[in-house]
Image (cartoon, rainbow, N blue to C red; front, top):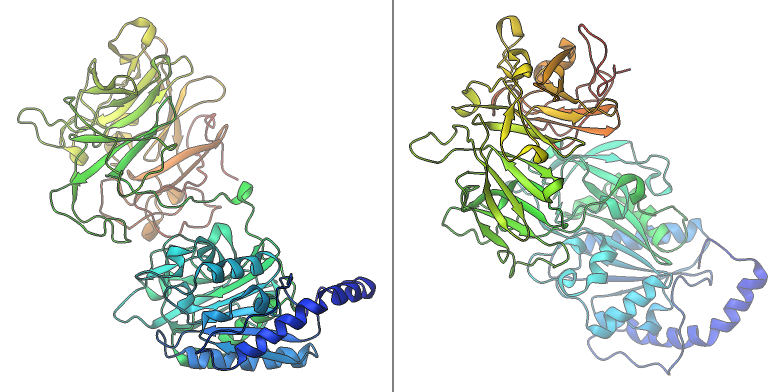
Amino acid sequence: MNLLRRPDRRRTARRSRRAPARLAAMLVALAVAVPLGGAVAQAAPAQAAVGSVDDGVLRVLLFYKPNFHASHVQARQAVRDLATQLGTEYSQPVEIQETEDAAAFTTENLATKDTVVFAQTGGVLFNVAQRAALESYIRGGGGYMGMHYAGWSVGQSEHDVNPFYARLVGAMSEGHPENPAVRPGRVVVEDSAHPLTQGLPAEFTRSDEWYDWLVNPAPNVRTLLNADESSYGGGNNGTDHPITWCQEIDAGRSWYTGMGHEGTAYAEAPIRAQMKNGLAYSSGLLPADCSAPDKAEQGAWSGVTPWPLVPINAALTSDGKVQSFGSVSSGCTDNTPYDFGGNSCVTQGGQMEIDVWDPAEPRTAANVADNVVANTTYTDLFCSMQVQMPHRRATMTVGGDDTLGGNAPNDGSLGVTSYTTNQGLRTEAPMNFARWYPTGTTLPDGSVVVQGGSLEGGPGGAGVLTPEIYTPDEGSSWKLLNGATSAAAYGDGGGVNGPDENRWWYPRAFVAPGNGNVFNITGTQMYELDPSGDGAVTLRGTLPADVANQGGLGNPVGATSTATMYRPGKILQVGGGWWANGGGPAGAAPASPSTSPAAPTRPWSRRPSPCSTSGTGPPPPCCPTAT
């Protein structure tokens, strides 16, 4: 059976070629149909083709496990009911082989099936031969339909020992919100025009266990339904949380839903509607585009890599390694440091060590700490900034916390360190001013300019009002750019300099495409630094008040926001809660009135959005007026 029919002439030829193989396979199917406590009868050797059988009969292998979810009873009944409906709609007799015995997974038996349905299966399911038969069947054109517990993987499961099975399901879960585990949640249709979402309302609310996926499947599957984590609370996948999806695996088809914990679910209209579509698709009756998003356009996350510390910063070294520093062990032991709760036994530790990771060497839990390097410099790298020094092929770390003598931990540091693969961490010539939370920018000529930072007291400290520059061709010392001293740019704000915004806090700095100057956004203030000579700052206006302060949505230019130049002359900025480290609204919307608010809210953000300009002076070269 296959809805995508070939011309009659070709289909007749295919049937005659496959008839002997199918006859042998049907003999095996008859043997499997009896109680499967004994061995499966062996068919005579035959080259059985795989995939949906184009013979006008809907044949389903319904595989279940009775010892995990009692709802397997209702799930199986729903499959039987829906298969009968499909048989009527497509004028095809229905044959369902229903079993809990994995012995049914032979090449010969699977060759007779249009789809295999996994109803609340769990644990390790197959032996080596059965795994090979299933994979060959799917890749050759067969179909798979999975429900709820088929995606669960606490303890050892088929996901852990069979990479193809993990691919077939699409994702695996080891947890969901608890207390209560079953709770109401909103489900949203991703594409109302897709064939596999027909018969479903645009959104609906129902109660279930809401699985969190260890790796979000969204980049690798066609998402059909999303779970709205904000509607039930406690989720860990964020705003893109697939709960039902389909996918193409070579010539085969796969459909899975994470819903269906309780038996009553299988009497609900939305659940039955999506299951009917999924069964029709996996059986080859209903054609649908289940290709994954184009990664060239959408991007994709890799798998999870264990890390020996909790990085606050990471930088790419000149030889392609990744240097990071942040929180390190506090002395206790968290036995599950890589779960959604993170490592509970960490403390700020940039003064102690860094990590250097070579992506060419696979990182595992066993070797995760092999490349940790002790920090023997006098600078606590926490709260510093990193920048590339191309002339020396070094990564420079500037400022941070000063842990020398009796200084308070949040006092700024004069220190500068560098890292190279050959020489490791080294102490460099200090800056003229101590700086806590500064920003460094590499200029086109290889010089490094440092702006902002506070002298002491961390978030409450006075800002450093004068930038400085390090030029490799002019010695090893730092030069103050006294001509660029500016309270409006680098102070707290307040008074004649506008609202109190801690503008010295990590200025968002970009090399302007046209003139090579450094364009900056600090708080609501925009300005341009000319680093030549003694330096000069030109103010470039401020962000509109309704963009900079969005009330309950926060300040998208607050101290903890982030920004990037996503193409020459276009800057995106988002996140940030307030003008200090914490406090105020949680997160912020994008800094453009024409852009929808970001979700979820992001006090510390990685996703930017367009900025706009207002005030006196011409639009700056790096931040054109928003449209």
